[in-house]
Image (cartoon, rainbow over all chains, first blue to last red):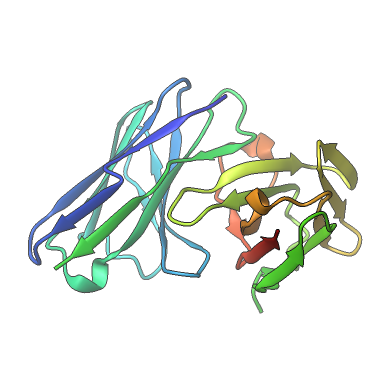
Amino acid sequence: GAVVSQHPSWVICKSGTSVKIECRSLDFQATTMFWYRQFPKQSLMLMATSNEGSKATYEQGVEKDKFLINHASLTLSTLTVTSAHPEDSSFYICSASDSATNYGYTFGSGTRLTVV
Amino acid sequence: QKEVEQDPGPLSVPEGAIVSLNCTYSNSAFQYFMWYRQYSRKGPELLMYTYSSGNKEDGRFTAQVDKSSKYISLFIRDSQPSDSATYLCAMRRSPFQGAQKLVFGQGTRLTINP
């Protein structure tokens, strides 16, 4: 089945630094990837839709300059949290759509970011 | 009003019980329906997907869709402690129009007690 690899699974960084999270589709091509943020005991909040070779589409209220998304290939999308602050601490999850079927969306295992 | 409504629970049942999880939605454009299971600190795992009204069965899981009532359900038979997780319903518009974002319910926290 489709597998999405997300790294790192857990990261701690100092306030003011930047952190990059990678999302890879291992056995399929993903024209579109999605980035979510999840707070404890809450559902997933879509941050942006990442399309290979073009600019990401951000949801209302999400700062595009703070959450930089790059989707340079059909198997890799990255989310960079720039100048991180403690309020950016959260669980970030990516998902990918198999370009061949567009049926099921596969999720990565998530990245727990803690900014101190 | 949210596009997708799901009772957040928590829901606690004894092992072996039949569990019923439900979502309602307001947007008739939704055509494709999914149920995900999420364990603590993990990404969601796709359990079931369907795009037609009626029932779809997979092992102990049955997904039910009633488009006329805009109501979907997930039934878990012979529930096991390992089924303890958060269950999220999700839906989207036609899958034949390219990749489109999912709209999630709030998630129901389920605990199966041994």
